Image (cartoon, rainbow, N blue to C red):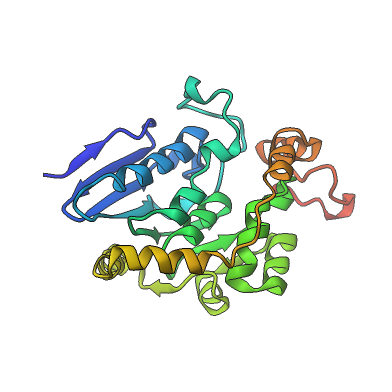
Length: 265
C-alpha cells in the first residue's frame, strides 16, 4: 500500500511506493495555477524525499492537459496558509531545492508547462515531456522581472534563445524545446509516466555521492540570481500589479500600445 503525506494544500497529492515518490499537481479548476501553499508544498515534497533511508526518487507531474502554468495571478486562493503571510518569494518557491536535491527529481511534463512550472522542470534532474507539452516564459508580459529565468535559462538554451523566449513570451512546442536543449526527453503522451519512472530508476542506479559532485559541477554554469530585483519587481512594482490585474480581467496591460491590445496575453 502506498505511503501518503500532507503537503499543506489539498491541491498537491503525495504518495510513495517503494523507491518512487509521486507529487501530483491537482487544481483543475484553476488550470493547476500554483498558489503560495502549492509552491511551498512542492518544496516540502523535495525535502521529504531526501529524508528516506532507502534511496527514493521524486516524480512531479500534473493532471489533465496541464503540468503547471506558473503562479496564481488572479488573486484567488482557496488554500491560504497563515504561516506564510510574511514569507517572500525565495522562502516559498522550490526551484533551488529541486536543483540541489540529493534525491533524484524527475518532472513528468504532461501538458502546459509555463512560468514556475517550466522552472521546476528545468531544475529537475531530467524532464520527461509529453509530445503535447508546451513551454513558455510569460513573466515579462505580466510585468515581472523574473531573475531566476535570467540566471538559469541561458545555461540551457544559450543567450540568444533565452533572450528570444523571455522578451517575446512566445509559446514553444515540445519538438522545439527538445531541439534547443530546454528539456531532454520527449515521449508519446501515453508513455509519459512509464518513461518518467524509467528515468528515475536510471538515476537511482548511479552512485549517490559521485552523482552529487557531478550535479554540483553541472549547475555551476547557472548565473547569479538577483533576488533583490526579483522581489522588488514581484511585490513593489506597479508593472507587476498591473500585469496581474490585466490577467485577472482578461485584457492587455496598459503598457501595451493601443493598436496591439488583443485581450489577455
